[in-house]
Image (tube, rainbow, N blue to C red; front, side, top):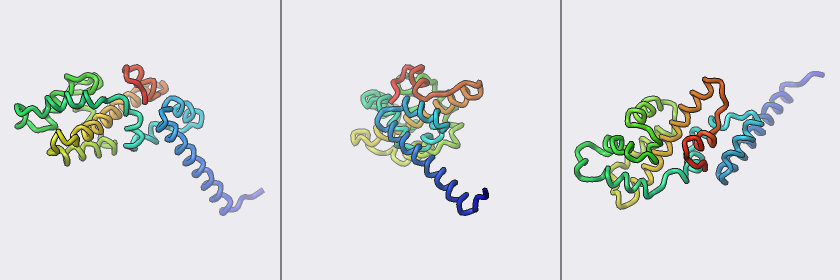
Length: 190
């Protein structure tokens, strides 16, 4: 039995649509707090969930929403915005102060953070968060603008760390799970 080009195109199109439907369902699971379940389903469907979500602010922020607390950000920003640091610039002082808050630096030192940033060329989420921070750094702290911008930047930074851990885990021939990795870092998975 021969298959026509039209039939082949239709099969390919249906297959692509089916894959898109699964991805949308997985993203919905994550949005409702089912990261671990979404990872299990993606694995069964042989879908690389990490790649699907790695460039989506919305999904990353959903996963990370319970990790970074506004009170912790405000304490960090109080130190950064202190007038004694004014001449050094926001970002430099942020990098200096961030390791003093292990719950926000995810246990990384300033040099580890800089290494992650310097290797973030392919992460659209991080590059967007960094650009947003650069454009809005003059926003007054009291207006809350820097809190949200800094949360987005820290979410992107944590995702860079997860990407690095994923790369190392896969290179070692092991399976990678976002939720398991967050748990091993003592961070509750969203």
